[in-house]
Image (cartoon, rainbow, N blue to C red):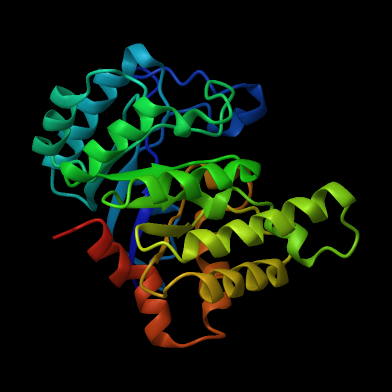
Length: 288
C-alpha cells in the first residue's frame, strides 16, 4: 500500500534544542533520522512514497538552524518532499519570512497552540488572524495543534480566514480511548460531547482538513469509533494520514499505528483507504 505520511518529525539534538523534551519523554531524547524512520516500517505491507516534515517546536533561537537543516533535507533525494516550518503568528512583520518560506518550498507553517507557551485564545488575537490571511495569500497552509477544549477557537479562526487552509493535527488531540470507555467521568463525558460538536462544526467548513494522527489507541474499537466520527463529519477528500514519528513511540510503534489505521479503514472500502493514506495528501500539500 502506497502512503504519504503528512506528519514526520526528525531532529538532531546537536543542532536544535527541544525545550519540551523532558525526562517524561526519555525514549525521545536522542537523534532521529530517516534511517530510523524507515526501519520502523513493515516494508512488505506499507510503502512510504513521500513524507511531510513537521517542525519540532525547537527553541526560538534555533528556528533558523532547523529551517536550514530542513532545506538541506529537501534538496537531497529522499522521501521528504514537503515541509511545515515554525512561525510566530503573533509577530508584527512576517512578510519577509513568508517569502523566504515560499521560496524554500515550504507547504505551510505551524504555531503550536497546545503548550503552556500559548495562552488560551492565542489564535483569536487580531495579529494572529491578520497573519493567517497572509498565509493563504502566499499559498501556505496552517497546521493547527490545539488543546481539545479550545477547538471552538479554531472554528472561529477558520471562519475568519476562509482563504487559508487549516489542517487540524491529531484529530484535535482527543483521547480516543474515551470513546469506547463506559466508565468515563462527568468531565470526560462533557469533553467528548464538546469535541464531537466542534468536529461537526469544523467538518462543515471548506477550508478545514483533519489529520488522522497522534492517537494513543488502547482499544481498537475506540479508533473505529473515532474514524466513523471523522467520516460522518468531514468530506472524505479532507482527511489525511499522519504517522507522528517519533512521538508515536510514546504510545505505539509506527508499524503498529499504520496497521491500526489500515484495519479500521478495512471496514470501509479500498477507495477510501487510498484517499486517506495517499491521494488527499498529494492534493492538499501540493506534492509533486
